Amino acid sequence: MADEPKTTVLASVILERIKDGIPVECDDVIIEGDLDLSTLDLPKQQVERTEFEIKVLGLSEIVKAVASSIQITNSEIKGSVTFSNCILQKEVSFSGAKFEGYAYFSGAKFEGYAYFSGAKFGGDAYFSGAKFEGYAYFSGAKFGGDAYFRDAKFEGYAGFSGAKFGGNAYFRDAKFEGYADFSGAKFGGDADFSGAKFGGDADFSGAKFEGYADFRDAKFGGDADFSGAKFGGYADFSGAKFGGDAYFSGAKFGGNAGFRDAKFGGDADFRDAKFEGYADFSGAKFEGYADFSGAKFGGNAYFRGTQFTGDVLTFRNAIFADPGSQENACRRAKNVQEKAGDREEAGYHFYREWEGRRKSKGIDYEYFDYEILFSCKIDKGELQAIQSRELTSLRKYVWYNKIEYLLFQLIFGYGVHPIRLWGWWFFFVFLFAAIYWIGNGVTDATTKQPLTDPLAYIWFSITVAVTPGFAGYKPAAGWYQLLAGLEAIFGTFMWAAFITTFARKYMR
Figure 1: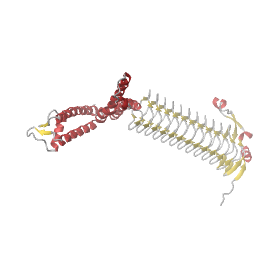
Figure 2: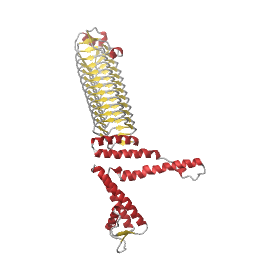
Figure 3: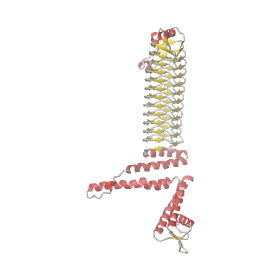
């Protein structure tokens, strides 16, 4: 059965009802013509306007008062809608409405609830300077063009959950006194929230910003939730102030992320966040805990002049593509945790700091020209100079990327992993014992015969690694004597390192 055609209503009929103060109720109809309140002779009232609203937005202090309740739901509005510079004294609902032309609500004052849930704006939507004294519902609304909410004021709940902004969204200097809900919203163009003020909680969890996300100098009085948000372009929170907790856990920053000079008055949660570009926290202030555990920094991470006055700063299990950023970040975390008395976390970040330092030094010597290095043509001074530089690179490559990694990081753990060192000590004891056993390299001092019991080889290896004595045994002449001497030197050194590391970790 074919759908019945929708009823067509002339815009002039609706305007006439508004003029007479009669409620307007239209559902699932087609409205032909422009809904322009400026053509009506309505009572006038005076409202307060800021200098910006008067000079920049062109709004008037003398506005028209609309006494009718207006409900135009699930309808198609073929013309433009002009409800600017007016006071809407009763509830207004455009839920599910389709605006095929422009929608002008600039400077409108909604004294009752304003419903735009599921509305579709085919052209640009203008709400700059609008004031919503009741709840404002834009959940699931679709803005095909640009959406202008600059200097708008939301005194109650502002609901934009699941809204889709196909063009740019301008909320610059907007004021949200209640709860601002942008969870799951999608911003196809730029999103301008610079200078916006959020008096209550602000929920941007799961929101998607495909363009420039501008939150410069924004003020969040309550909690700010950006957990799971995705930023495709530059995310700029420079100078933003977070009065409550700030949640960016699981957020993805596809471009650069700027938090320069931002202030976090509460806790800052960046767990498992992903920064594909650079992350700039220079000059930022963290007064609560700052948690970057599991975060991934694909570019440089800047913390120059950053202040951490809370008791917790952690980068546990964080991944840094730039080793210099890892060194700097983990050094700051180490200092914070030492000041707070958390030796375990301080030791962890000390290890990560030195790991970053090793990598940052070794990265400069990862590449060298083998062909020039091992060339036999050294008759020219210039070639010799080149070979000298390449040989220096080779030596430093071997030191930073091989020797320091194996000895100081992997085995000795930069002095903060005594259990690891203990494990490596036993590993080498058994390794040397296996070598002695395979080659029958240890003899009984009394019988002069090679040992046959594997446990005896282990015992011999332990005594060599701990003391200069051979426990009644002796290594075979030649290479085994040299091997035993090497084990004695290395084993004693490892034992001393273990005692030092153990005392440093558990007895200070």
